[in-house]
Structures are given as C-alpha cells and as structure tokens.
Image: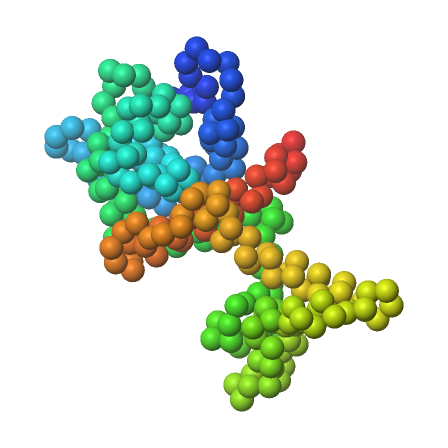
Length: 262
C-alpha cells in the first residue's frame, strides 16, 4: 500500500508571490492522471524488503516529470530538490531533515521505466483519457513525409516541399492530397479578387490543420526546453521523447480541462 502523498501547497516560504513555476506545477497537478500512471509503474517498483525503504512510486514519478518539464539531469534534479522547497513540495517530500532521493535513485527509476517500456503505456493512458473527455482527435492523419503513411488515410496534409507527391508512383489514389502552395505562388495571389481570397483562405486552413501536429513539437522545444538529446542510445532518448509527448498533450489541454471540470 502506497503511503499517502503529503499535501502540496505549491507555495512555500515567506514570499506571497505566485511564481510562473508554481503556477505551472499547479496546472499540471490538476491535469496529470496520477493514480492511473502510478498504477502502471507500481507493479515493477522494488518492494524494499531489505535496506532503506524505497520512495513512493508517485514521488519518483513526480520527480521524473519535473526533470522533463525543467530540463534537469539526474544530478541537477537532486540538487534542485535540495535547493527548491517548491519542487520538494510537488514531489510530496518533507523539509530539510527528511531523506531526499539522490541522483542514483533518480537514475534507477528512469531505467525502470525504460526497462519495462512504460513510457508508451503512459502515453496511451494519457491519450485514452483525453479521448474519453473529447479532447483528442483520433481520426485522420497529418504527416510530414510519404514514408509516414500507413495506408488507411483519407486526407493527407503536407507543406510546400511535398508539391507533386500525389503524382509519385507510390502515391495512393484513394487519398485526397492537401499540399501547401509554394510561397512565391502564394505571394502572387491577387487577394483583391474573389478567387484570390478563396485561395488564400484555403492556404490558411491547410496551415491551421498542419499546425495541430507541429504544435506538440513546439511545446516540447520551447515550453519544456528539449532542444537536444540528453542520453546515449536510441532507447533512452525515445523513452524520454514519448514521455514528453504525453506531458505535452496534457499541457495543451489544461485550460479546456479546467472548463470541463468546472
């Protein structure tokens, strides 16, 4: 039985200012399906029959997610827990005198997730939850290249670099192609006339649809600061990226989630 998490105030110290980091953690506290994700990890967690008792799975999962949100290595995450009461609070840890996870403990938890391929399961859990709430589109495919097509598409959207893709030998005849106009052609549109206005509006619609697949990458790079790989090996970096996509999906729907819950 996992011990209950300590109440997270997300605002320790004498300052009354609500920082951006505190606001961010409060939002993620609300939208992350903690119980479901802990249930995925718990069967693989060490029981701690010998030696020091292990930290709660939820504590380690919260620490793991903070690493992704704030671009922290294992040693940097250990230091941050010692330096920042806010992060200890979010993880459900106590004050200065309480034992805190060290970098080896943090690393071992990450290896546990990688060994049992839990990141894809967490992403699936998040996506299933969002789909059930009507917050995730499950039909249709928005792609960047023909090699990503799985053969069941009805509509395909691509940027201007894929002009002529519909004429390739391996292009499916059952697919309707929506490829962006080249920038030079678009600038040449005469928007003072009805035809030019309609063509420009069509290009805007195409771009807005492509943006739905591009937005998660922006969140991961700009919001979470993931601009280069941290680990050695495809498996480690793939696991991190899958986790980041799960977290970015939650971050992007946080305001809609609040409306639904309200």
